[in-house]
Length: 388
Ligand SMILES: *Cc1c(COP(=O)(O)O)cnc(C)c1O
Image 1 (spheres, rainbow, N blue to C red):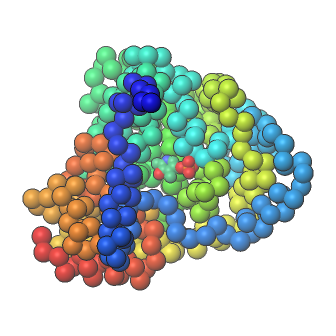
Image 2 (tube, rainbow, N blue to C red):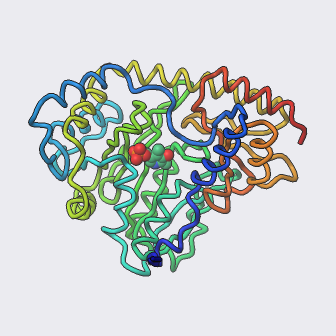
Image 3 (cartoon, protein in one colour):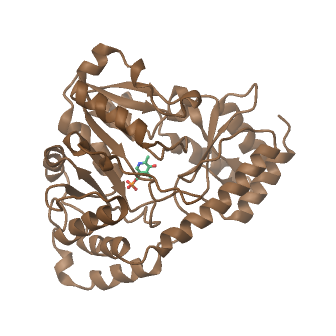
């Protein structure tokens, strides 16, 4: 029997990584030694002290029951403490912090709380695909803000038509940025805040990569701006910071009213994050942050090897100050997918075509620094043998 799927699913483009996984599987089946720079999932294990805390917490029967909808109080207190130490931002743990089952979950549910059919959201492009697809699921429309190299991959707010700005419900920004690796400074955030105030727009800042930065750079929180809490929330995650992608733990912080709307959706859909995982999350946020510094050192070394090798091969990527992505322009004459295919076929290297993150990503490929440095050296050696 065939059952027709809902219209919202028919509108979806093929999930980017599905296609890449399929191609990769094909090569592996042929016995090719594939180097996977395609997916943004840390290859390193979760630090030991966090795992130990989960083991201990999972033995405590009180963690086995339904968690609280908005998150365990202790975890939210811990998040507020971390925000204070890391960014100097004061948060009320019970009103201004919401626990998420990974930040993707919160980002995906957010449009259900604020978008009516036909509403507009301002979305960067290229971007994490979840932003647009879930706005679409809610019946909304994305107005795409192109991220271009000549603008340092920051959206040009003055290019947004006045009627769109007046209609827009929220704007998503994401710095340090996936996929471009770009970073944003205070002056840009101030422009966004001013714009949001002028047009009565909610700002959603996806801050998943603030802890993955190099050369001593410390990305800021949007909430550091005075008055940001009037209009903004920030999504955060333990996934990238502590190599915990599989654990599913994140949080949203900021404006209490805006968070309450998201919480209302969540309480009708999920029942919160496993308490033992939240206890392990407390251990992650409150213990010595040496594991974060160590991770930064590892990615920085990988980044340097890859950037140096790509430049020697005649390519012209910018040096990212944060994230584990290298956003590499394709050589002349190659589209994103043509270059991705060449790298895959001729060098056994999986990358992601920039165009898969949105049309302005055409002309780039994204490489993730999620394999060891020997493998990156091997990838560089293979790329340098190619002629393009
Ligand atoms: C990885 C990532 C996330 C975080 O995902 P989790 O659901 O917290 O694992 C959020 N935003 C972007 C842009 C990402 O790349």
